[in-house]
Image (cartoon, rainbow, N blue to C red; front, side, top):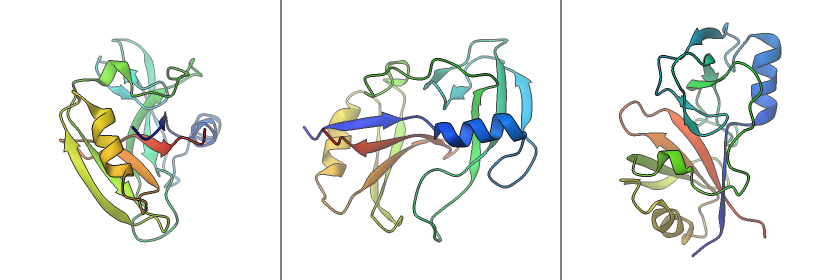
Length: 155
């Protein structure tokens, strides 16, 4: 198995959004109360009804170029404890179908694969077996929204 770490949206980007009220496209951030079930990219779990959230455009971390995009994400309106510190696959999202999109060092899409959430580690290892793959982005199957980043583990 190839060691990896799962990362939520970039903390610096989230701090900037919270501080300025503007997103990656310089649009105003929307504040709302959760209906429940919104996937939170700050702590990698679904929101509970009534939690105070932000909805904003986020540019996932890839090299600048034609494959860089901005898409909608939900996050807590205030700082939260973040995801499980072990950096493993989000426990709350096991069993959820996702697409893992692979990127090379230039930030270009380099394959990918849909998985049913049952054994995401095997799919991650399969994609990272290609040495050209530098990073993976987990994406929502229906809407295509960015969920989290998967990087090769340094240690």
